Length: 242
Ligand SMILES: C[S@@+](CC[C@H](N)C(=O)[O-])C[C@H]1O[C@@H](n2cnc3c(N)ncnc32)[C@H](O)[C@@H]1O
Image 1 (cartoon, rainbow, N blue to C red):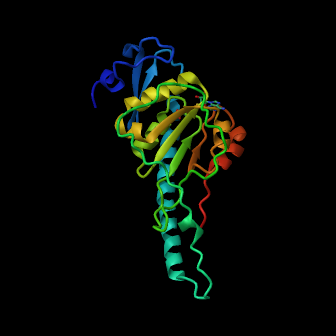
Image 2: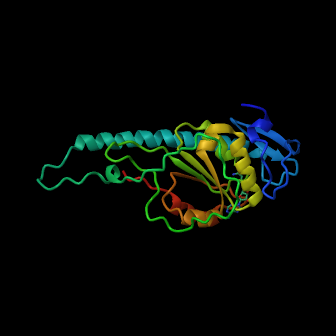
Image 3: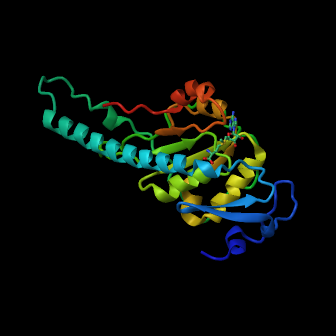
């Protein structure tokens, strides 16, 4: 990777249009991720949460590996059961026929939208966006993760860079300065981060309710109790059928 200035680009500006001066920032490295923290520390960064983020990464790795194992067991059970012989048309297992493919990522280049506007895609999705199997192939699609309260995006960036097998991480925050920082940090972390992490300015509850069954993992890290986010978080999780 190049110098910090090269990584962030000459054209970088604050959302209010004021010029961006790298001297106002400190580079913080945690795990494989690096973030730019403004001297004024306007965006939440809690150094003491490093263990919490480490634990989340361990849990996520375990989840991905268990999910794969369970999927393989389910496939082998289905293949051992074989097709029905009653003469009736054989219904294919639902899990193998549901096909909702993700858009292929073409974002090899490091482009992060700089325009920060409230997320407008609030219509209820007709289909579960997700993350199910490819038609008839029995493949398990890589998981999509939502970090609903992402601040600087550090946690999302660590997921993208340190956990193998993730398809995408969506990072939300309802604070403009946080989203601006998150987008800058995505760019700062290079091509893997740019291709895997996307940042939206949105109220987490509205976003989760309007993106039902789109995520395999939802991470909630609020300032206080997570209780106000739980109902909407459950709506946004895709429950895999066995
Ligand atoms: C504790 S910080 C998140 C820290 C982050 N997860 C990390 O590991 O670095 C909580 C964040 O939630 C954001 N937030 C609070 N209420 C929100 C809401 N309703 N929707 C989206 N973001 C919210 C705040 O702006 C803040 O950045």
